[in-house]
Amino acid sequence: MLKNKDIVSMNDLSAEEIQEILRTAEFMKNIVISGNKKAPNLQGKSVVTLFYENSTRTRMSFELASKYMSAASANISASASSVAKGETLLDTGRTLDMMGTDIIIIRHPMSGAPALLSRHVNASVINAGDGMNEHPSQALLDMFTIKEHKGRIEGLKVAIIGDVYHSRVARSNMWGLSKMGAEVVLASPPTLMPLHMDKTGFKVTYDVEEAVRDADAVMCLRIQKERQQAGLFPSVREYFDFFGLDQKKLALAKPDAIVMHPGPMNRGTEISSFIADGRQSVVCNQVQNGVAVRMAMLHLLARRRSE
Ligand code: CP
Image 1: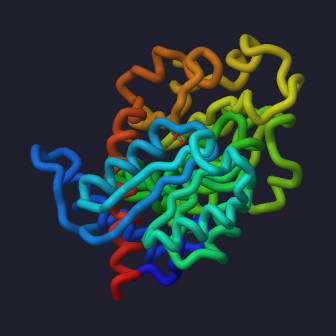
Image 2 (image 1 turned 180 degrees about the vertical axis):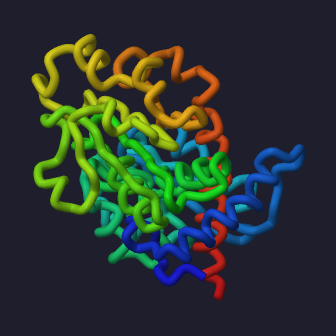
């Protein structure tokens, strides 16, 4: 049983709750890969995706997860709703509440928007990515994928490389993976690393080769051109040379290391096409597991609401 009505941060989830979500996702994956993607878990529940930012994977997998479990589901994109007429986030949330929405899944460019919404609505709120802050469902599907390939999370070395500064994926994974006993090493240029990150207890380096050496999993982060001012690195070519994952750098990891990327990928910037499509890449597994993990999150939140 989840203790909170919402999932807005990995910090809200205990190690036991993360384990329960991952265990539940194993059952859900059987539905995702089966020929009959219909389960009754969310019958009688309504789920709304409220996206103020673009998305392919997160929005679609939450929508499919809702439909596979028989929820009444709907989507609101900010540009096609009353948000475009000036309605506030809280008024939109209260409006959805009054319509009987059980679960609101929100993506917003402002850090903290899902947490704010969660305090003002009866519906359960899932953070589908807020600004540079967190992306818990991505971290959970990443942990599920690591566990699926490695059999465990505890004791593994996970290198997270790239634009750490702007990455909500990095932050949620840092909190989640460390809670589950993994060693997390962060690598980026100094201009793309948050100040004082080395004082948080996580290992920080500006040398990708050091981060990747003997890693069990290498997680590449997208260069977030939409969130950064010009001038944080000299050129894409130089960035790729020093921080992009290629064969030479990956050869330093354990021979059976897996390569991850939350997507969408900038091929030739943070990862080479050869590696993205190579035998160690689990990027497609991450996408498939995203549906199963989001089914688990919706199921557990809905069960908490019912009980
Ligand atoms: N990984 C991720 O959040 O992808 P989308 O932006 O396509 O949802």
